[in-house]
Length: 101
Image (cartoon, rainbow, N blue to C red; front, side, top):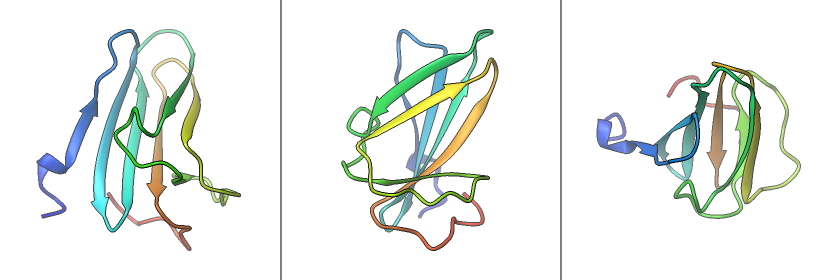
């Protein structure tokens, strides 16, 4: 069942104020939420391997209509204090983002 809570997991990070949740949505699609719980802006990079994902994923940011030029092996983010970003990661190019998680 794709809606079961066991398909959502927290990605451990011991030295950081960035909370990462990853949801496998099926058919090679995942959603990742990055939330800066700290009072200062942060810039972070995560390999897909560190997130528990296979390499060469197409990375889309929710709310932006920018198509990635190529698959990537790393996610790089700049987050303001108490800011969050929702990314969709797919094993193929997407024509459109899913309407919901």
